Length: 403
Ligand SMILES: NC(=O)c1ccc[n+]([C@@H]2O[C@H](COP(=O)([O-])OP(=O)(O)OC[C@H]3O[C@@H](n4cnc5c(N)ncnc54)[C@H](O)[C@@H]3O)[C@@H](O)[C@H]2O)c1
Image (cartoon, rainbow, N blue to C red; front, side, top):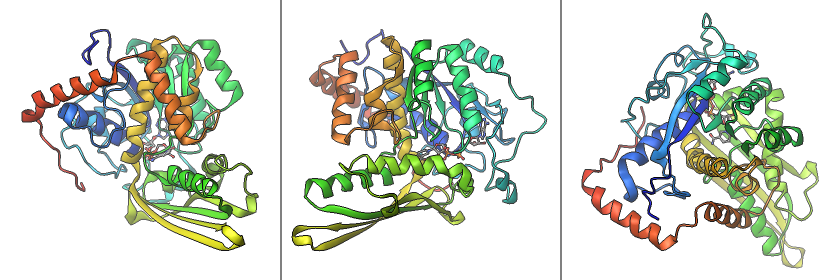
């Protein structure tokens, strides 16, 4: 078997919400398609179960912003209010135009009080699709995996698109903290429809959640009792602007808090843990800054504390994990699995149906992938090396910089 196994096909992806995260994902597909095997930096899997990033094809997309609807996805990802870094300035046209989406609760009222370059602008006058319209597009485009990138708090909109995915028998990767994979009733619906689902709320590559979890586990393993902790986050993108509405924020707080509490044998009293998005700082744009404080008791009952500041570009930080989640979802679909793909949910998501310790989740994911595609690891390395050598001369590195 080789990396060019002709049995492997494209992974047809439909995007719901062409915001900053979608921008990083689509840029990433172009970036890694161009570089081949020696452009693996930043990916945890270049080849995952026989699928490479370049096998991901965006075949459908929905948004409700007038600056995005009607444009090719490759252009729409650079339209305002998107503000994430351009790390790939040669995204080829996808041939897929962004369709008008179903608004429902996608836009929070307070978003109207901000300048156009910071906020969503409804494409009024465009006809919103019905359930059947979306299902028809998913079928016509032979979509394998739908990815949900709606704003936090879009409960009705997320459920609308999830129902469409179910009826079209399309797998779902739910990157937002509306609970679908981790909700018993929804999980059952996916099982009954014979469709895999991965969710909920994407866990970034090296973001606040994974760092906080690993440190929590470290305290535990070193015999230090964690007494109190907070995690404060600031950012200047539309995700942070949207989360100024505290009603929309509640599921995000649950998701982020449980992600840390689950690493403890005995969860902290709610008064001793505070985790959540904290404020919108416009000039930060897609830069997210996280402040973690952990207070503990060590040997002899002597107190200690830890302060940490983490600064990341928010959207590319999650796009690599999404690239893995999509490919795992396709593997599950190929294998005829249905319902939540438990280990993949635990590794890639903050609020999975079943929390696991990260090393256990990572091991379980590798086993899952290997079970679907038992390619010898040495052969992968050899093949990747050969491809890298052949392509090295044609590689163009894209500059990383601000737009
Ligand atoms: N690292 C990360 O960036 C990260 C991590 C975890 C979760 N998430 C979640 O992923 C989601 C997307 O994040 P983002 O930064 O791309 O947000 P964003 O605000 O940049 O994008 C949201 C997009 O959805 C569109 N939209 C709004 N209502 C819609 C509707 N009804 N139908 C179709 N499109 C609609 C908006 O116009 C916008 O383009 C958020 O919920 C965020 O919390 C992101």
